[in-house]
Image 1 (cartoon, one colour):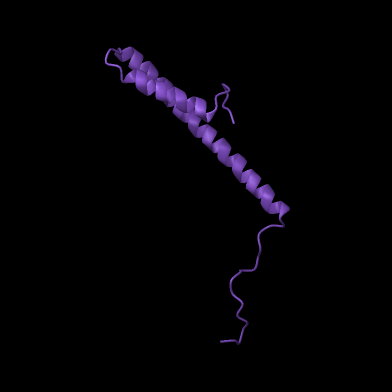
Image 2: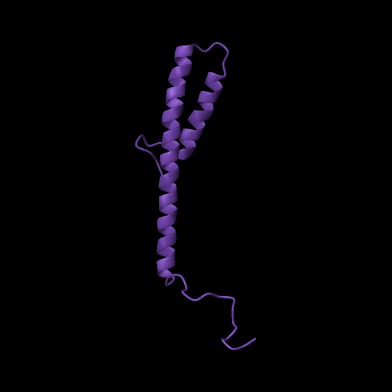
Length: 86
């Protein structure tokens, strides 16, 4: 999956790692650090959206698979005791 800018989760993760390296530099100005922080926050939100999209796609696939298999069984398994037996 990709976000509105065409980035994948891996792209976002890679850029966030780059930002961490850039912010860790001793000679970074406060203005540059703030710009990178703002970018990181946006990327974090994008990563959350991408994760939700992936989860939604996974759940939709699971629902399709369950429907194709005839749905979930309504009877519990594992118990073979008949009423009156003990």
